Length: 409
Image (cartoon, rainbow, N blue to C red; front, side, top):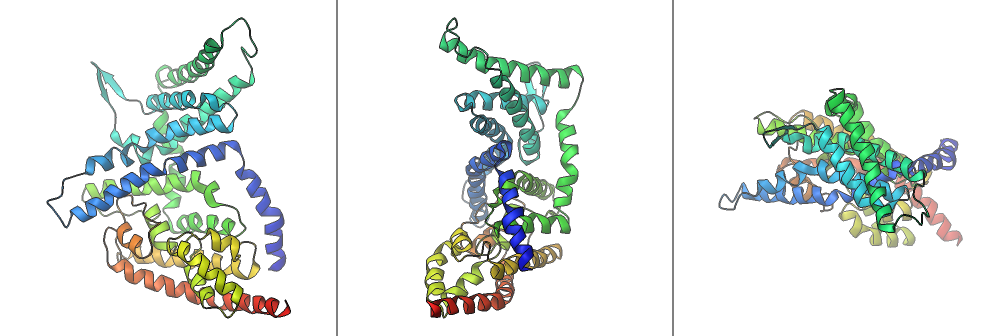
């Protein structure tokens, strides 16, 4: 086991970290991170609607949710183009690249325009439009990058600078939009449907039990090697948002939500103390016989209560620590397994509206994320106890090692 972990840490994990530095991956991840305030806005309104359900005299703010989370793909496609321009070295044209991406996306969703009436299925602006938004942004970035590599008009004294800037914005836009027009209106292709169908198996797999486990375990696995989990966001985020979007549609039609892999469940129910379910370990450290572990546990406790465990992972450390990595992996398999079967059995409410409240302490965020289901509090107590049992023997082994080091020092 030690040799395997040594190989993973010294060879495998660095290769993954190098892959993470790929510009397109960084552009997509940066766009998703920049789009978080839109999700947060929708989450705040969802919390308000939860309160309004008990206080009917409060005004209806559901349009705020509809026109924040509901049009998330519109903001996302602009951000993909904008951050892609920065990553590829033509950041001064970031705004125009983002706008070209947005225009391409508007063509991809293929609205009906007749007699000055613009009609399109509103759902294409929300979570179901995320992958087409990625596609529009990536195509725009690739074409723009190829254009800027040609270095046209560079150091040209015959053309004024302002005209060069206009041409550098117009020419990539013409190429992107003419290409899109040819595909959609010339060849009569429904790019939105094609892209959605192409990635629908991946989204469907994410909502199966094995896919659910992998979407939670893989980021935690790499996190234990110090590799930040954001490199998985371009894959896991569309699955989670497509799941919550489908749940919202089912709930609106009087049907029971069925998709379990959502950010509500992952970050507000499963990750108690942060990715890898580390709060129990932090509490043990606060009660440790080792002065060093106890002191560090006290420092890291407040962030852990708000589900922020970077200080614990990199400082304890869990990352690249063979003794503590293994229980982190076990927790990332056992805890989601319990949650999956509890939700499938209908013992806790499956979320039907986005609730990005994971920075609130457990079980407050769990209660809000499941729309005020008190049963989730009992579930969190059980999950914390299970994670404690998993962490305990490994923590004691780590504590003995640290105590010996302190005695020798």
